[in-house]
Length: 357
Image (cartoon, rainbow, N blue to C red; front, top):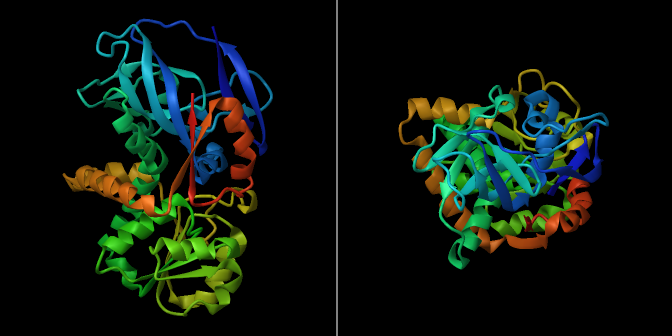
């Protein structure tokens, strides 16, 4: 039986295709997962932009020539065939998937709540992405929360980690935090964490002119500013958290803030088409923040870090209902029709896209 998968050109993400290939036969210990649904946001374009640097293309490799790759997504899936006694048919998992009909994994370290994929080619990759959460059977009651988890869970987790790092460092002595690409969902996660923190300094959401009104409407930033208005930014001690990776914006911020810039943190590349490859865009002293590494390090030093982070993600996702509209598309054909707008950065920031399979 053939299965379908969405693939993009690794050197030009605006080129895509739907590939058909025969379903792989299982070997001992493996299970076949049918993807129920997955989320797709601007953050997934970050995976593509950092595909070579951080190894995202390696999770679900594409055989043959042509230079195509798979952008990973977060979603839910059901076991439809199993050669693993610990994971029977009918079990459901939440985690990292290809935008495809199915995925074959080899469960290891199986507990009552989670497992890891021991497939050989994934073992050198960040372990956080190889972890799958065991979840209950699908129901009408679970549908909404699960879609929010797929859409916002990883992004709000990154936002929480950024807040944690900034707060643990005394906000770097800053009186304002500038969040670049403020309408992105990772930025909104950070903004929510800062809003929840009574000790946090003022936050400025830097965004495109067309998204200023949306950023203001979320109520998560002290103020919103368009990229073209960087020269009006107050010149006071500042932390910049850059989700965009646009070198022109980074240069404008450094020029405006000068020695008032206390910290520049690069996180994502939502403006992937304008981003340069290689080092971060905040300057040589800018820090690149990689959430999976931070989570491992922080969990080792703070026993209840994961519990605190998950509690924030759950509460933050619930609060997002005030600005988030979930849009559902049926099947990879329909998803591919929506992909160009996301790739071009034209998707309404108030929308979260779910592809059901």
